[in-house]
Image (tube, rainbow, N blue to C red; front, side, top):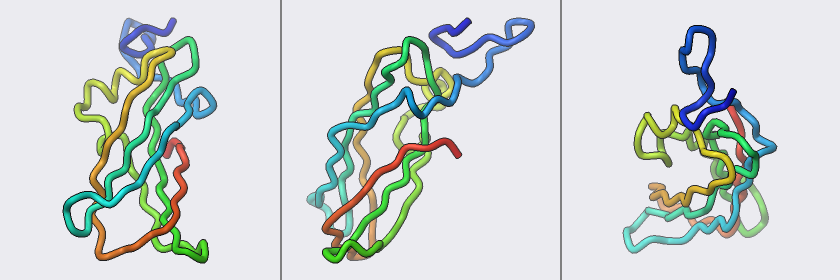
Length: 121
């Protein structure tokens, strides 16, 4: 049975929370220039809509130019947006949300659009 800390396997050993991408939504994504040169700030809310804990996903960020052409694609694993390993291991609790805020360094990119996709590697 799911627990707050994940799933318990045979002998009471803790396993990883299930990977259920359909239970997750990402909302309010914003990508803005920060006050620091060559740094963009990504902010969003990750929401678990299910009645049980689920594993944290990776995110794929695609930056595009004004013509819609891909400039760069970056994979953001959970350890870049969740501060500690214990929280990642525990997973995202049922019917909760987690605000995300990341500083992303770049080499003078000037994207005009972006897309974010959640996935499990």
